[in-house]
Amino acid sequence: MGRLDGKVAVITGAASGIGRATAVRFAGEGAAVVIADLNAEGGEAAMREARENGGRAVFQKTNVERGEDIKAAVDRAVKEFGRLDIIFNNAGLGGAVGPIEETTFENWDRTMAILLRAVFAGIKFSVPEMRKVGGGSIISTASVAGLRGGAGPHAYSAAKAAVINLTRSVAIELGKDRIRVNCICPGGIVTPLIYSRLPGGEPVAQQFFSQIQPIPRAGRPDDIAAMALFLASDDSEWVTGTAMVVDGGLTAGSPLSRERMQGRVMPTGGFAGPSFEKQ
Ligand SMILES: NC(=O)c1ccc[n+]([C@@H]2O[C@H](COP(=O)([O-])OP(=O)(O)OC[C@H]3O[C@@H](n4cnc5c(N)ncnc54)[C@H](O)[C@@H]3O)[C@@H](O)[C@H]2O)c1
Image (cartoon, helix red, strand yellow):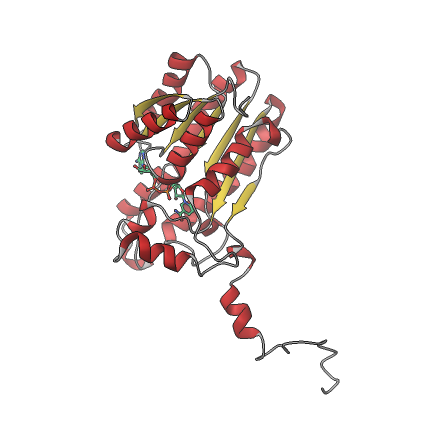
C-alpha cells in the first residue's frame, strides 16, 4: 500500500531537479501526478519515469508566469484523474541576479511573478477543488534564502521569504477546511538550477555543497522529495503553516566558522568560567 494511494497531485517545475524527484516519488507511492513545466522534453521524460515507478502521470505544458496556465494544470488533474488533493508549487529559477542598484524593474517583476505570484496562483486555483474533496495539502518550495541573507540573489531571497509568510497566512484561513498549507526550505541541493551556469558544472557544485553545512554531503533532490511526501501524506495531518527546513544543518551554523572559533575566542576543552576569573 502506498502512502498516497488514491490521491491526485499537481507539481510545477516537475521536469527537473526537486520537482521531478518528487513526481517520481509520489507516483511510486500511488499518486496520480500532473507534471506541469515549461520544459516539454524534460516533462515528457519525467512523465515516463513516474509511470515506470508505478503511478499514473501526464505532462501539462505550463508557464507559471501565466495564471491561466496554472489554472489549466489544476483543471487537467480534475479532467484526467477526477480530483485534486495535493499541489506542489515548486517551479523556480535564479531570477534577477547582480548588485541591487543594477537590478531592473523588469527582472525584479519577472522573478516575483515566477517565484511568488505563481505560488499564490497555485493556492488560489487549487483551493476550490480541494474543498470539493474535503481537504488537501498545499506545499510550496521556499528556500533557506528566505530565512536569512546571503543565501541567494536579492529578488530571489525576497520572494522566498514572502512564500514562507504567505504559507503561514493562508494556513490560518484554510485550517477549518482541512486544507493544510506548508512550505519547504531546501539548503544546497545539486540540481541544474545550481550547476547549469556554473563553470565546471555538476562536479564543482557537488564539491562545494559537500562542505558548507554540518552534514558533509551535498543535498539531493530526493532529500526534498522525502519531505514533500511527508507533507502530502496523512502522516502530516496535524501539520500546517510550517516552513520545513531541509538543509543538512546549514542554518544551524557553518562547520567552518565553528572550527575557526575553537582555540581562538573559545577554549578547546574543559569549562569556560565567568569572565572576571582568570584562567
Ligand atoms: N537547488 C537548490 O539548491 C534549491 C535550494 C532552495 C530552493 N530551491 C528551489 O527549488 C525549486 C526547484 O528548483 P530545482 O533546484 O529543482 O531547479 P531545476 O532547474 O532543476 O528545476 C526547476 C524547474 O522549474 C521549471 N521552471 C522554471 N521556470 C518555469 C516557468 N516559468 N514555468 C514553469 N516551469 C518553470 C524548470 O523548467 C525546471 O524544470 C525552485 O523553486 C528553487 O528556487 C532550490
